[in-house]
Length: 113
Length: 114
Image 1 (cartoon, each protein chain N blue to C red):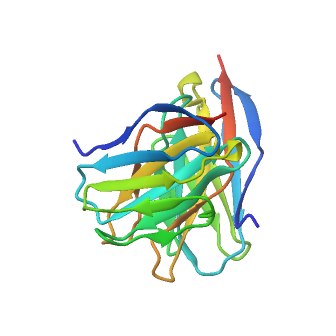
Image 2: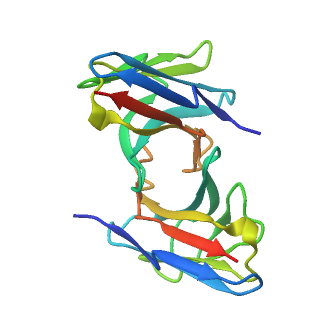
Image 3: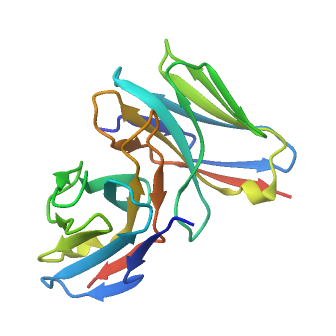
């Protein structure tokens, strides 16, 4: 049972394009949604995060859009660069008190020069 | 700079053997986590801990044990390793306080069970 779903599984874009990565969830107790980025051969690291109180979170070229009613999020990367090539994981934390993160299966992004 | 280290970085084990993966953090975080990463599955939580002496089962604990002897150290133990446990294992630490739950990951251990 996958509580956090990501699409597409893989994506190739050209340098300069806007990349859109999708994430959806079902559990209504989720209240915090971090995105982690993992470069090949490296460990995941926090990229950007949003909580239930916000609809949008920006950090430079990275923006999370959050549709709470539909339980959907999307990560937009503007002016995509070859250095953005990595696997992006959407995750969720429950408000139940546990500090566990539930990770999606990831989207592998390739940005072509 | 805060750090999470793992040892060994690579391990080849035989089926039925005992494997211990070690993790050390200098973040002074209360929470520590063990994940495995397999293609198509993302990161799956095996065990986690809220502090020294505590261990909790994650989503896929079968075949694994965990030990948290101190704030800094968290081990993952495979008593009877099987080929299905071939994977990349990540340890992470996180602060229990505040509104957010950022986790800091170690470099990973690549385990192959033959």
